[in-house]
Length: 519
Image (cartoon, rainbow, N blue to C red; front, side, top):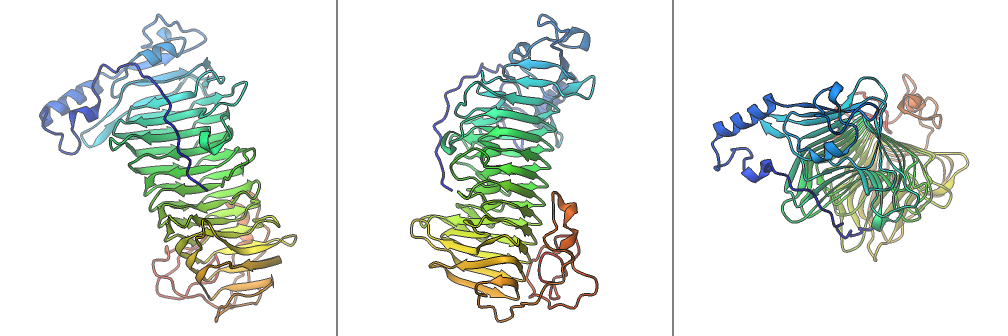
């Protein structure tokens, strides 16, 4: 995959009368412009007088104060004109509908060791209030240059007559703001966003971006328990700037029928992507796309995710360790029925993808006949692949490992330890000009055109309960557990092994582990 530079959109924002928290220069020490006592008093006073505001499109009136359900606003206009203060809350009547863009202003703060946030949510019932951009606005919900916001329980769409570049359902934007802190998006239903399908102008369901050299980045950005459906080009993704974001967590989301990439982290260090489900990606785009992947990130952890139904072989893998990344960790994931395969590890010759670890994952029936299960594209280095269970179906005949060049770069220093490669069909190997690819204590069962040089290779059938029987969800994977009291060779000890197997069983650091994802 290649990095596409975006020309910043021109955008305007009505001036915020109250100064930003960052303008005071008051971070950990609260700075020198005002005293610590004065600062704490100011924000405690503001929080004490926080206000609840209500919107009801059925019975409200924009001339109302908005300060009670009986005096609710009717449309988004008063909410966009208001400058919210720390502790304020904006409530939408359950089941109501609104057209246009919600672009609230104002910021919460951090004081007395805790955030004082501004919250958006619903009241009066279980049905979600819906905000529909109808393709008339670039972003249905826009959080631009604000911080300390919690947004929950909204339905959001942005379907226009024609596709448009950069169209989104939700956009979180740091445009030369500096550090933009605490943006939490939870339980949002984002659907039917027809943005551009080209990577260079990609639309997205939930999109967050930082740009500018003013140390602009996110700190404490959470996207959790959201449902994203039929969004183009991507589902949940980031575009980074000059400074990498911190404490970005994407957790527990369900993504279905995504035009291109499912979840993409771009420009974050220490990001966490876990417990997400991607069902159907690269459904409509023609350029390269994968299920879940980091780009220009260090120390990303991608775990407990399920990816299936990625379409096509222009990438099309469930997971991707992309370039400008170091120490990406893929563990405890379930990948199945992805046209392009299980894993892509890639970097052009002039760049790097270093220190990727792929452990305790299960891959089932990944890769079309014209694809591969593992694809090492370009000059990745120091990749460790251990204790995975890879099942190739009876109707599959494809490379288990395919090494290719990128700008004349080739993978080097790749180690495969303690993996089960179960070929119910047939697998081959394409080594290209890769270097220092090593194997130890792997299981090569079934039809392998050649068995790689592994002095401790095992070719006996591994004692799995019912391999190939996985379906949707982790609960379907019991067949990949080991039969009770099975006598099978053990693997090699791996330092810093994560301390557990795919199923949660403890893996002690001082004894040989089992082979495959189940200990």
